[in-house]
Amino acid sequence: MKKLLFLILVVFAASLAYAVDHSEFIEGSFADGSEVTKTCLECHEDQATDFMTSPHWTWTRKQVVAGKEMELGKINAMNNFCTTTSSNRVHCSECHAGYGWSDEKFDFTDKSKVDCLICHDSTGTYHKDGDNSGWPGEHVKLTEVAQSVALPVRQNCGSCHFFGGGGDGVKHGDLDSSLDYPDKSIDVHMDTDGNDFQCQTCHETESHQIPGANMASSPDGNSAFGCTKCHDQSPHEQSRLNAHADRVACQTCHIPVFAKDMPTQMDWDWSTAGSGNVVPDRKGVTYRKTVGTQTWEKMVKPSYAWFNGKSGVSLVGDKIDPAAVTKLTYPLGDINDKTAKIHPFKIHTGKQIYDTENNYFITNHIYGDAGYWTTFDWQKSATIGMKESGLPYSGQYDFALTEMYWRIDHMVAPAEEALGCLDCHGDEGRMDWEALGYKADPMDEK
Figure 1 (tube, rainbow, N blue to C red):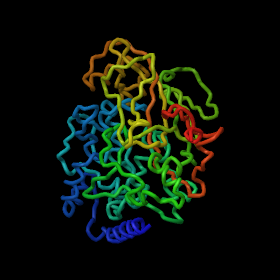
Figure 2 (figure 1 turned 180 degrees about the vertical axis):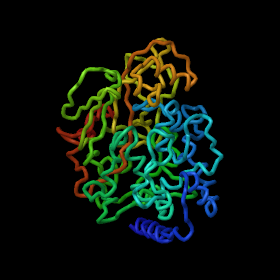
Figure 3 (figure 1 turned 135 degrees about the horizontal axis):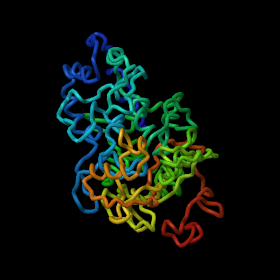
Figure 4 (figure 1 turned 30 degrees about the horizontal axis):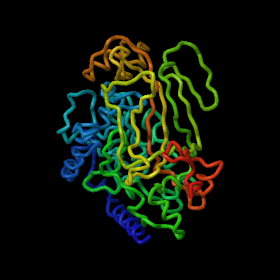
């Protein structure tokens, strides 16, 4: 508890120190976001230098995956939504903390292209359009926003992380706009009438390096952290509960459900896209010609798996078995791995386009004049996307099943709503003990 109180005080003190009225230093007007950044650099060039080494700028970093050193990150990781960002930069760069990243010619050494405002806007009016490579919308009053910069709050981080994958709550399940101003039933840490944690309360940041990343872009588990950063390893009065903490992640008991207020996408079937038929929406299922069939759920019980902090990934160009489900991202660890714990996950399933001759997934070109959303021509969009990835394309395609694990860490419930013994054990328990490597419910084995 002392550690937790100290951390809250540090963040609070930092926020007070950072609440400087920048109208004294910034006059404007500004032609574009880059002009704002040039003004920021007059006092904060070192901060820009630090930021430009972070994955929020590079979207990639050197790491070891399956024993092989490679550059991997958001820019080239496979995902279960639009496959990759590589051929869709104009659109995906809406969530890049920079300006103008439309193709591989983007200059990552140009400090003026750093977007300071996306993280430091305090007006709530800053917005980056989804069709112009990350430049702010024309309606944004840049001078007003620049004069009001402050320490980031949840809404800053959430402008990207709540809406990744194409909409509110699509990807993660435990991150959506309900966390802007939640009460404790949504998240006991971010409760605006209680702790009111901001993201950096836990994702403690130094020199613009922000710890914590998703399993697809950081399968090596670099800079990961857990609940014991603030809580004791043995936080319970009952020794039996503390014994559970040795092999069960805190999140497993303390996040009984996710997508509490906003529905999260659980399946995306691209194979149905492009149809001229009008398919009526039904409960939990939507259809649009541009994206196909999507399935949504609220109050979702997590899936559970052993997790040692590292993940397996399917990389661009990896061979697949189209008759089986391809796991694009999945947790590593098993019952015999003493570093692994049972952890909650959202498993997102899908149906993605693949090359039937080469047996690998196609990095599809979705956005733009020649993209699938404009032409509804899989052949054309596949040809463009594969050229961008540098992979041969046979010209033959079909669709294959996929799944992708997303770890559940947010939407922590109040203590009285945590799982009890019979939620996991007993006849109606939620755990698939055999899938976890047990012969039966371990309580029955004692």
